[in-house]
Amino acid sequence: MSLEKLSSNKVYGGELAKYKFKSAALGGLDANFNLFLPTNASESNKAPVLVYLAGLTCTEDNGAQKGGFLGPAAKEGIAILFPDTSPRGAGIEGEDDDWDFGTGAGFYVNATNPKYAKNYNMKTHVTLELPQVLETSGLPLDFKRQSIFGHSMGGHGALTLYLSSETKQYRSASAFAPISNPINAPWGKKAFGGYLLEGVEEAKALYDATELVSRHKGPLHVLVDYGTADNFYKQGQLLPENFLKAARDAGFDEFQVRVREQDGYDHSYYFISTFGEDHVHFHANFLRA
Amino acid sequence: MSLEKLSSNKVYGGELAKYKFKSAALGGLDANFNLFLPTNASESNKAPVLVYLAGLTCTEDNGAQKGGFLGPAAKEGIAILFPDTSPRGAGIEGEDDDWDFGTGAGFYVNATNPKYAKNYNMKTHVTLELPQVLETSGLPLDFKRQSIFGHSMGGHGALTLYLSSETKQYRSASAFAPISNPINAPWGKKAFGGYLLEGVEEAKALYDATELVSRHKGPLHVLVDYGTADNFYKQGQLLPENFLKAARDAGFDEFQVRVREQDGYDHSYYFISTFGEDHVHFHANFLRA
Image 1 (cartoon, each protein chain N blue to C red):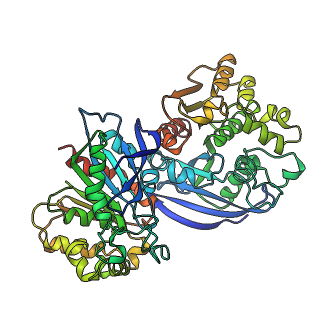
Image 2: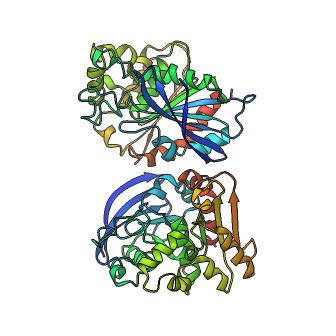
Image 3: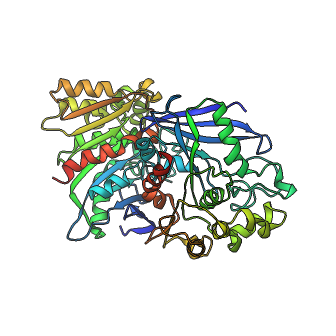
């Protein structure tokens, strides 16, 4: 699992580096990721890790280039890990036919449908494999202090990986325009119907933030932003109102689960960058504790 | 010259809008640009205008998406105008053959070579046409308060349009990794050799920042950043040291012409975004005066 460094850019005093490695979780395919290391990170001062999961059609680059996260992370001394959004080049029939399924659309699940089960294991890739690969590489990262955030499909990933972790792997989770109740939305039904043998029924247990929060025990640290001019919100793909209601019904108040409606914002990285600094600061409260 | 709005995104409380219009300066071709308007801009409180000129191969989108300028501009109440980097679709033989000449590489000159003179007039497009089109459209912009900045070829554009303006159109100029002495650099020689009848000799009078600063009379407000890990700097395409020497020889001190060498930074938008806030604040000093 040795890492190959593909590029390195100095940014805000730190380094944004792109790496490649052969991913066991993704069936031996090459996987890319970006890592931002703040300037003060060292063996004796390992940086906490904030994981950013991107949305449909995106790669490890979108958040790094357009999110507006790196300046705030540099100030807070936080590393940001940017995984890709799916395996690439698996060669499975049909995986490149649609923009909302297959390549660029891994939905951060572990596939149980045999057709996809060898390659489409983004959950294991993000939660287990990348921390292992990075820890063994000797980079100055402290994976005992992790939080996670994401956009759209990546917001779904951040919320579900946070809420479903029995080991409390992440200290906090946040999301921009997350797919918050995918078992009731077209994108989610399509993805789960493809990747999971039991489809939506199987997803209920592991991969639906609204279902997960309704059953959750113990404290939560969650921040969600979505915009009223977001066409995917209007089309019912995101359903943050369902997530909010489930959280309140389960007894989580606005200090534990904060869902903010942002007037006039859409689904783009212009929206994300506007609130990017806010989200990094939110996570810093928990990562530096 | 009526404007067609192609898209609008809310960002940092303001609006980033993309427009299209038929450009007389560019021979009647469609021209796109982006405009960031801060939230407080209105008919009774027109916003000053900071023009951002992008580099080779770029469009009106790169700076808007990756520069990190919009947050600082929103705080300062400054509008940012992002023109394209060349005419597009002129149909001139060979204009799409190279990435450093023709499409995406207008060099902010007015062509005198008849082959290009109908379309390649980015200087007039930026300095005259866009202000006219925007003023007649009724947008709340104050073109009496303009400054200009840019990257690489766009840094060349910003410095030369600032230094060559007899009407003092711009209050200040700044640049990231500018092509600072193009008559002595491969990119510049190629561009001027193509666009200008007299080539480099013609460029000396109008289009070379080092030549212009050496002859300049009157006060200057210039900021330049470049990185020591910039491969184009290492290859002698940028030559900021020539610009700096000419400025000092002409009597401009570090308060009038500041050139900063940034250790370890390269030519990318990661470099630009790191110092983007700095540059917006620099211009705000003059735009708000």
